[in-house]
Length: 454
Image (cartoon, rainbow, N blue to C red; front, side, top):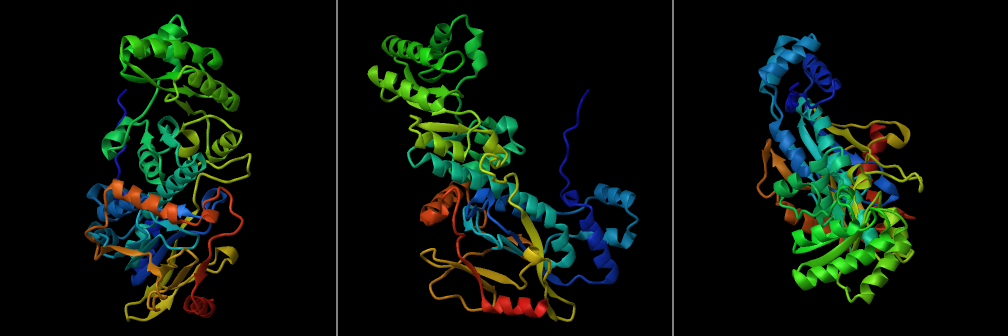
C-alpha cells in the first residue's frame, strides 16, 4: 500500500485557536499593531543559559506563511467562518517586523529571543510556527553545548541521534551549532555540509564466524578504520584488534584509527584497553565510547578516570532529555509567545500584561543590552537610552515582511559565533548545575509600566 508523504501547509501550521482568535479580531475590527515576545521563563537542564538556534527556520516560516484555496476550503469545512474573513486570509502575508537574537547567541530566561511587531492577526497566526521553529533547535543546541562542555576541550562529540530523534535534520543542525564535530545522518551531512562519521554495527561483527575474521575484513576494506570491541568480550577483543591492526599496517598499509565501546564497564575497560594499546606502541589509536550517554554520565566517566578520547551521543541529544537520576527535566525549553504592546487604529498605545503569579508577563517593546564583561543583562524599553558600553543584543532580521540582507548567515558562521559566545560565557554559568542564575535586570521603565498596567 502506497503511503502519501505528508505535505507541509504553512497556513495550517497553527493550533486551532489561532484562526479562531483571528476571526474574533476580524469580527470586532481590532487589528492594531501588536508586539509579541518569544522567550523562556527558565533555562533548561538545570543550567543558566540557552544557546539560540532555529532563527533561519522561523524566518522561512514567516516568509512562507499564506493560505491556498485548498486550505481555505478546509477551514470553511471545519468552522463556519464568514466568507469575507476567508477572503482576507487568502491575501494575508507577514508584513511586520522581526527582531531576534542571532543564532549562536547566548540567551537567558525572560529575554526575548524574537520580538515580533505586526497587525494582530498576522502576529497571532504565526505564533505556534515561530515557537516550534525556535524551541526544538534551541533546546538541542543547548543540550549539545552542555555535552561538549562535559567532554572537555580535547574530546570530540559525534551526534548519533538519527534513529531516535524526533526531528533528525533539526537535531543534526542544532547539534553542530552546539559544538558537535559530526553527524551520523548522511542526509544532514549532505544538506548542511557537515562531517559524517560512523563505525560498524554489532550485526556486522556477528556475521562472521569469528571476531578475528570480522576485524580482518574491516581492516582490508578501509585505509583507516575503527573496530567495535564489545560484541562479545571487550578485553579479549582488544588483543585481537591489536593483532589485526599491526598485521594490516604491515601488509596493507591500513591504519587502525580507533576502537569503540558501546557499553559495559566503560571506566575500567577503557583503562585496560588504553594500557594494551600503549604497550603495543599504538598510542595514536583513539578510544571512542557510546551507549546512552549524556552530559552527566560523560562527566562522571571522566572524573572516574575513563580513558576516552571522544564520544558518540544519540538518544539524550536527539530528544533533549533531562535526567531522572539528577531530577532534571528535559524535552522542552518551555518557550512562550506573549503580547507586550498594542497600538490601536487611532495610534493610542497600550502596554499588555498577563497577571498570573510567576507566569505574569512584562509589558513594553523591549531591547536587551549586555555588559561587555558579562556582568549582567538589562531588559529595557526600546526608547530608553542604551547603557554605556553595553552591547545591543536584538538585531533586526525582517522589515515590512522582507528579510534584511545578512540575516541568514551560513551554518559555519553560526557555529563559529556560538563557540565564541560559549567561550566568553563566565565559567560559573557553564556548569551543568548552577548555584546562581545569570543576572538579568529589568529597567525601571519596564517595572513602572508593569505596575501601572497591573
